[in-house]
Image 1: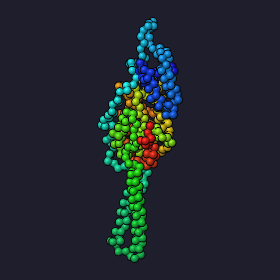
Image 2 (image 1 turned 180 degrees about the vertical axis):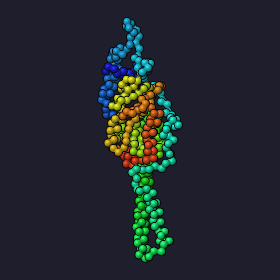
Image 3 (image 1 turned 45 degrees about the vertical axis):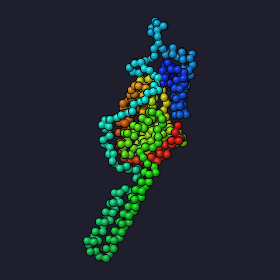
Image 4 (image 1 turned 90 degrees about the horizontal axis):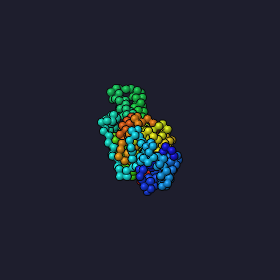
Amino acid sequence: MRGVDYYELLGVGRNASTTEIKSAYRSLAKVMHPDAGGSSLTFRMLQEAYDTLRDPTLRRDYDRGWSFTRPHSPTAPTRPPRTGRTGRLRNFGEDPDFVPPKPSVDPDSLPWWHLVDVAQRVRYAPAAGPGHAPALAALCGWFFLLLPVIAVDFSPLTLTLWLLVVAAAAVAAFRLVRRYLTATKADRRFATEVDAGAVHGTTDDRPCERLTADLLSRYLTRLPGARIFHGLAWPGSVFADVDHAVLCGRRLVLIESKSWLPGHYAAEDDGTLWRNGHPFRGGGMRLPRSLAVYRKLLPWLDIRTVLLVYPSRAGEITTEEPADTLIPPMTPAQFVAEVGDWLAEDPATVDREALRLLVAQVVPITRAS
């Protein structure tokens, strides 16, 4: 297909062996196949790239088409195409021994970090009862109603009427206190049975997922109401269709972790990805469908998506600023700053029903793939 660098699409070098090409194809096919959430067009490109590069004759013809020769010198040596905004030569092959560095963000650079009261008590919404303030107010009111009985000499009729008022107030206060105690027990039971911790689920074995899990635990758990999920399934699925999610208040962010080639990534409103000014076809993602599925499952939540990108070899990942598209690619530092600030609008609230539904979608360890 014209305009597509098959080596870049597969993530291999131009001198890659047939075995390396086959291995790269199998790895990408698992995530780019339409059944795994990829698009049929992207998968066809991947299949075409593999079919071309595994055949020596087709590969030789393809390399000739991509080679650059000097004018009037048919014997001049070939060179790989220039890509990116700077025109620098790039080696597009991934480094199997490369481990992305652990993201580190200076908390002093985060405006929301010091505005959050980490000791703030978690509030479950919607509230299960009237809260402690009405109950205490009723008890105090009932107490003050009794004072005139002690201080004033009433006639028998007035005293009877007054005692009736006091009795009615006592019944109201008792009901409020009972509702408060019932709500307190319900919150404790919910915390024990459903909200047992800030993190639910486990990550995959991919290094980028482990890095994201560490990032979420180190920074977003500063929000008392933040609940982190690893490996969420779509309703009716038994696979981990969403890498990570964070719920705080009535806001939810869905996250995919990707290990891609260094470069500058951007996205359009329709979800089209660009790398170094060129359409990026080096990997698929499930976020568009995940967003649609979870908006249907949790219609009362404000849901957004983020594509966290880590380098697959030595080099730097950069993204657009600000990332205001539907599915923006982000660096870890950008994610902590922007998404952390977004979630910190309501840092200590946990939505009961949303949490219950999300916990039910966490894929158990034995079912993870």
